[in-house]
Amino acid sequence: MPYYKIQAINPNAHLFEIQIKVQKPSSKGQVCYLPNWIPGSYMIRDFAKHIQWIKAECEGQDVLFKQLDKSSWQFAPCNGELKISYQVYAWDLSVRGAHLDQTHGFFNGTSVFFAVKGQEDKGHQIDIVMPDGEQYKNWRVATGLLPIESTKEFGFGLYHANDYDELIDCPVEMSDFTLVSFEACGVPHHMALTGRFEKLDEDRLANDLRKICEHHIKFFGEPAPMSRYIFQTYVLGKGFGGLEHRNSTALHCSREDLPLLSDDSETVKKNYQTFLDLCSHEYFHTWNVKRIKPAVFVPYDTEKESYTELLWAFEGITSYYDSLACVQSGVITPENYLTALAKTITSVRRAKGRLVQSVTGSSFNAWTKYYKQDENAPNAVVSYYTKGALIAFCLDFLIRDKTNHDNSLKDVMRYLWKEFGSKGIGIDTQTIQNYVLELCGKNNRAVVQGFFTKALYSTEELDLENPLKQLCLQLDYQARHSKSDRGAFKEQYSSPKRKLGFGIEYLSSAMGIKVKNVYLDSPASLAGISAGDNLISINGLKIEHASFEQRLNEMEPGDKLDVLGFRRDELITFDVVIQEAEADTAYLSYSSESRNELFKNWLNI
Image (cartoon, rainbow, N blue to C red; front, side):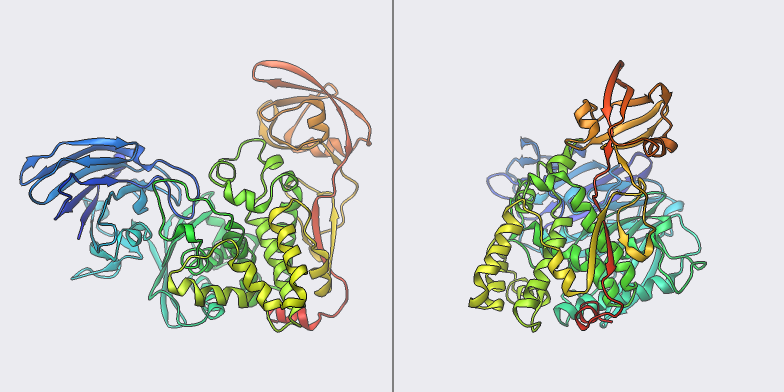
């Protein structure tokens, strides 16, 4: 059984020190390696680059070793226990890596723990040691790992993992965190909040999370697949993100995302809804991708890429249910949910990449495209999160329609959990399609196959109108009425006046505006404006970030603009012919005054 000891040896310098004891090293020379990627984030990250130094000994004698490649080492054969020591630099403030300073320590096992090759399936012991110093006396430990011997819950000390896969799937947060606790279906749940915040409404947060977690547990069927669960939440001035694990999740949020004691108890503010969606999303992953997973992830090979077409299902279906669960559990209103749905539709509509990349292509190439987006990504990449969510929405109502509303996508997910996830069996590219065909029957085979071919393997537009019509909902596309407009439920916005389009995303600059992205075939694109250009004037007048869109809308379609800008240090003139803005923003509304039974059943109201 490999034994690990980890200590924040120098928080000021962001250094963890790790020691490993291998009782029975390989007689041919023990090989150890560090993962190159972390499950749930599909990009090679080369965590080994943060290793400062490595030492090894056996019975008091130094052991020689050699590096085999960028992330693996082989230690000379020795007769006795092999002891390996090394330091890791931890200054990656993300949910994927390791971060350490005077205020907290956080690490994923993929960033700090060598795998002992050939012993990955054995039990692992981990001793998490408190940093030296009076300022750390109030620190505690939040992790999904199981404490053993005399180690108290949330205490420093010994923890156990059944194998290396579990070791790297249970991140650790250590700090003087605020702990919010509740039970969901009898299972203890905790949120450990690290960072600076004030006047948190802990009771509201616990109550809302309990409703969402119980919804997910009952969705798949009790009992829950974990004995306890932890939301590890780092609170920042600005931050957002999450990464799922088997019985925990690592989250980043902004202070303004949290519910405050001063908030209106009858409404859910936009930022808090976004945070609840994030919590719901990562919690749903406890089943969908952590246990129901592609066959190529059973087991994970963290030394190289693992390609799959199925991220549309694991991220897309999860994205469909994250906000839907919030309304079905009564945490948000139907109208708030419909605004979230409209924003998802808008996100897909604005992505020109949907016209050149299929959702399965996006999934397969996540390693090089989705996770390595550049300035041309809006024109070349489609999100398997957002388009996958719309595919799930359409699939849900296709199943309902073809089974006389006896079944839905929920039945598919329960089947995947019962026959695959709960048994540790991976699914292949046809598993979901085959079961949907079975549910819908032979008479609907051509329709179902046609749906999957179009939705998954083509760049044709999804038919959203049909399921929305079933729900007595109407979809309208209009031009965005402000830079921040991403769509809404119709009663929550006022109809905009005619808008003119330029075709860029931009940031404020000291000299005007800095172009972030240029949409293909837009006025800016046709004029030769490119990402990175700094635009400084229109028709001889300085561009002001705050009034840029207002100036555009004072013009008429077909007007010619003399735009000056710098590309690097060179001044360039662009001749822009203004056009009406594209109708790329989704607005949903009720098509009748009363809600039909399908709508009520769908949202559980």
